[in-house]
Length: 144
Image (cartoon, rainbow, N blue to C red):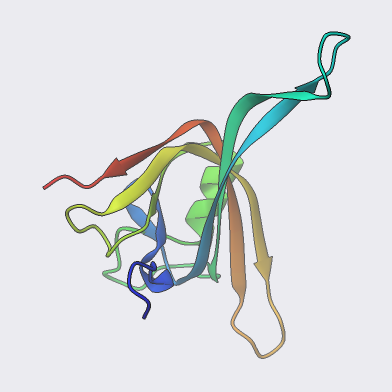
């Protein structure tokens, strides 16, 4: 592995303190819009920054129920319940080694804005979800 490159297996999305059960991929997207203006007193177009927005997405196996003894996770059913209820969730996107001191993570509040299930013949069913940020996203580090 190239030094300094994140190991994709260690990056995770947490909803509160819960991971998404049998996740296979996740992504964080942060963007800032721009506003353009041109007046009779400018030479060309000027750009100013607009608001920051963010979202996170994840994919995994579509698990209807958790095995006995498995706790601290979200599955398709619990994501569905939160989405339909319009529940705002605390989101944490980890970049390190699953909660070790000094690991960087990004956190904010979001709503589940999309939830999809795919079921192909003779394949495991999969699910994907989109979290749309509600407010700012912050960078933090797990303290010692």
